[in-house]
Image 1: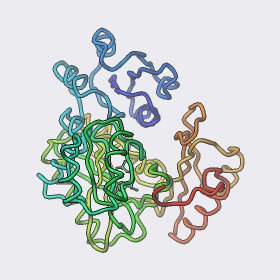
Image 2 (image 1 turned 60 degrees about the vertical axis):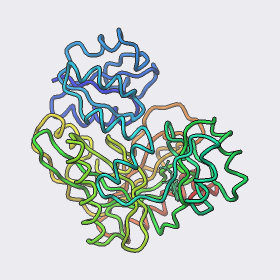
Image 3 (image 1 turned 30 degrees about the vertical axis):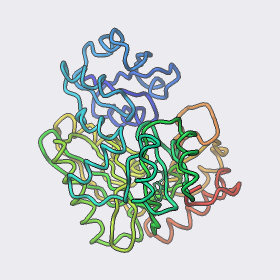
Image 4 (image 1 turned 180 degrees about the vertical axis):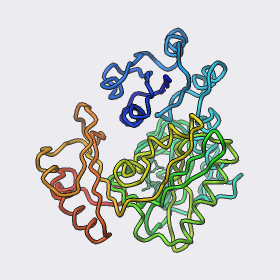
Length: 373
Ligand code: AMP
């Protein structure tokens, strides 16, 4: 069976690596010739909207999925007219626009931070009336890893920030004084089977995911149940097929949804070693209508992203219970070059090993503190 993957990043590479033991083959599509998936699978190098290249990509495929959420919706819809494409293009399209995404959450009765659309200067006064400062101005489209966002501390900053973000449609969003951030990965198969991984606690640095801990040490059973209820509503509303990640802010026993990713997710990398079935294998099982695997955690896991610089591999491998994944990408500041997963039998041991890894990782050693940058 030949699976086509739109996007050739590390997520595509890990999907392929999980699919080979199941007898699957892969072909990627990516505009960059050095996309990591190309190291392990056939890669069609072309823009996502070049129709002739899309036809070449589609020849002989049994199924199409995507690993990059900014693949044009029209590309997914074009392919869906000829081939099974999952997750459904509607999930991709709604997740590409923060306003559409928030409306979808609200349709599913999922609480979200207060927000107001800001498409131009005529919206400034009303948005400032509704949203207390400090707040965040976020572009509706193409924001990721903290890009496309500006802090607004006083009303005068709003016009300047809107100019700086490129005079594009934005949202003004309340700055949530959250205690911590979590994500929930849910999965729904072509046959309608649904499963959830344990909540993951995520720490961001300058808007980029830096560390995940799973199962989330501070999350109660009630929080897990609430998150599952929200994600299940989305899975059903979208007639979703595949892995869906939803990120939440936590305040006490309340969850506020921040955003969703209709694909395998960085906060699920720990599942490769830390769960009975990895998110990558699970996604493939789901889209092919195969039985889902167990989502049970194997003890406690921590995942550390290697951002911008990779420490000497020997230093990481010398630590016990440490698993290194390098994506074969050229180093650039803040770029996700790989990750390390620690697996331990107790939360305490996991935290101890996490500290040892952080001391080796230049990004953390050089004074990047956790929290918003
Ligand atoms: P995003 O690109 O929306 O996922 O934002 C990246 C990170 O910025 C989030 O994971 C949070 O750490 C932080 N952030 C985003 N929106 C808010 C908000 N409304 N209040 C507080 N922090 C936020």
